[in-house]
Length: 252
Image (tube, rainbow, N blue to C red; front, side, top):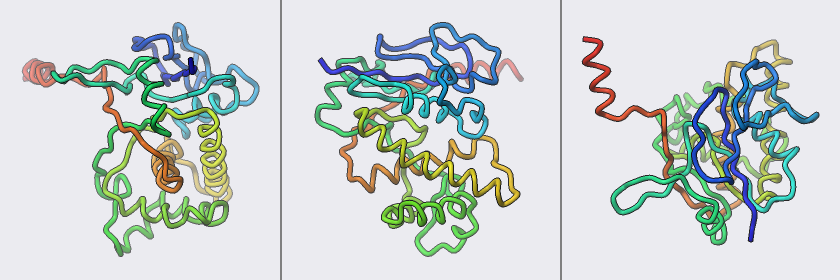
């Protein structure tokens, strides 16, 4: 049987969901004094970027998976508060099991979250010909790097900023060889963007490079014409409507 491991990025103690294929990974562990039960740490191996978690977010976990996880067929990343699920006819959500994930992968190249509508310029959506894109910081900083390192991606790079929907969260599952290809491409770009920002005398903003990778993942998927299975997410920290109403009444 094929093997799969889904790493669940967390920076705090959180409940574990799913079966044995789900492994908690403590991201930003190098600068944290917290102990997360049953979690591996993203600084546990020599080759890591754990100390940069403030600008790379869950990508410090992604980097660990790329460099240090070997010998499995499929690999994936999700969050302690965003997990891939299936829904039955009544709408009940269940975290995808090992067998369900492997069955999906037999006919697809990658699993991504359901696409979500972008929130205008905040998430990088511009109308075709909109000149305001030229002053949009993520576009400004990534464009020259993509042009220099991977010019064949330019058309898909441009298209991403004029596309109204995308998969958010850096959540994905794919084969380990494909994952390694993606990480090589992704970190080539992000490390160069980081270097350019610092050499210009500017400062990398909190979580900035983690956000940039959300666009880059969608660009990479589109450019390589991968077969995608979109799935809904389980959001355990999201308040129900009833809970929100109760909380609101308590504050009155």
